[in-house]
Amino acid sequence: MIRLTKAVEIERPVDEVFAFVANFENTPRWNGDVVKTKKMSAGPIESGTTFRQYRDALAGAGEAVAITALSPHERLEVRARLADSPAQLTYEFDEVDGGTRLINEIEVDPKGAMRLITPVVESRVGHSVAENLAELKRVLEAA
Image (cartoon, rainbow, N blue to C red; front, side, top):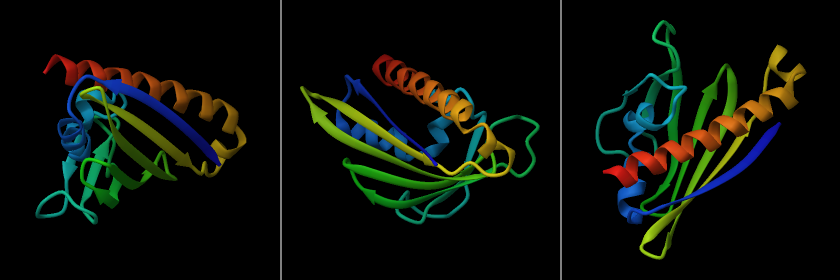
């Protein structure tokens, strides 16, 4: 099991950061590994909302992403399958000096051959998450 926690401070109000992150169709704007995300369920973004994300323009069915818990402006929990491995992602939003501290916790249970190289996968995931949060900060602060 891989467990990582990364954080970033963004000079934007909590409500703006939360709304942007909770709408997973924004993910390709800040996650360099995701090329497209499509909302699959009808209605507002809430617990139970599902998305499909694609990491490669040629990827077939993509990966399922589902919001499992949502406390507006505070917490967002997501269940996903990343590279065929079950994952749980948690985003916590805290107000700091007029901005937002975003804490991203990730748990991934590598399957198959990925399990054999867990330390390499953990390093890669940690590096990617840090890069993605830095890009999220850049995108939101430029808005």
